[in-house]
Length: 152
Image (tube, rainbow, N blue to C red):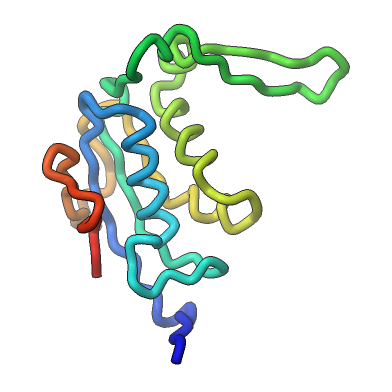
């Protein structure tokens, strides 16, 4: 018999990740699984029962290869001929956390649930953050194995 999770049964945890020297794509896959709740045995696609993730030192994140200069992000203003392009290098210099946020956002499914789940991602450029009161569990990327990402 399949057990479905109800809103009252959801217990969200807090996790902290130090992004110093981490590769953007690999970090984004780990974070997207946690904020979606896919690391839990009670994962239900239509429910929001993911955990909160605090990422610090995102200003020291890196890309592999020459993607930092050559990759392009496109957006449209909504006006005719209003397509704008930027590189991760320019975006990272003005908004350090935006590159990682875009990577995680694009790994989530489209819709209102994904927007709600993205609010569980807290990104900070330095090593300080205001979420110490939640006692986040520290996830060390160097010792991380895909099979034991914050399992219940």
